[in-house]
Length: 218
Ligand code: BG6
Ligand code: MG
Image (cartoon, rainbow, N blue to C red; front, side):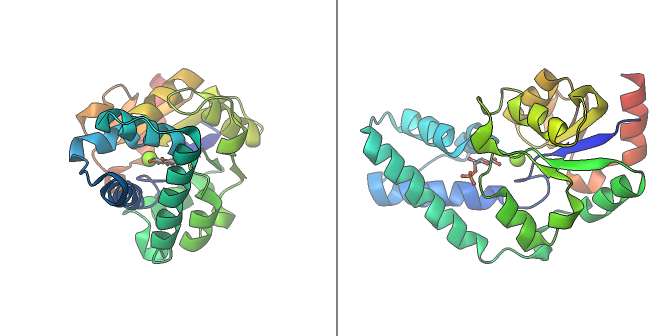
């Protein structure tokens, strides 16, 4: 049996992924009078604020000076944090509250392994801060997802090896990061996540017994 569960946040615990991309879309509209296609969203999922902005500027084929880059990232975050005002416990994704309490009942320790610097604020708004034993700080890891660093740091925060943990993700870069860390990857989402050790279509389908069995056979 695994001893730790390392959670992504946006798109796994809470339905906040939509707010991220909406904030990017607004920024791009305001500054460059351009639209972003739906297909670009996956490339901004799981990756840091700065890497998301690089993906977007790359798509638009726009180069900006460093100070503009910093200002754009800050403006997006201001809009995103404003959108978070509306976030409550009602934004916890289906099945997650039960999944978290079942894990805790079975003695599994929980850590947050999110690329988001807003992670602690969001957990607070969701009323989930006490459920987590550790929060890995994305500002302190050398490389963001798809590198394994944040998952390794989250396991360390629990005093565990990543091989003794499962990681839960909704993003391509996130699943790659879990796999590279040595933890057992559990994905919630579509076929683009087929590189996970185990995949469920959505958070409501997360099945702890199935995860335990698959972890044991791994
Ligand atoms: C991840 C999101 O959880 O956090 C990304 O999936 C986002 O889309 C990243 O870019 C960084 O978030 P923040 O809140 O620090 O800008
Ligand atoms: Mg995510």
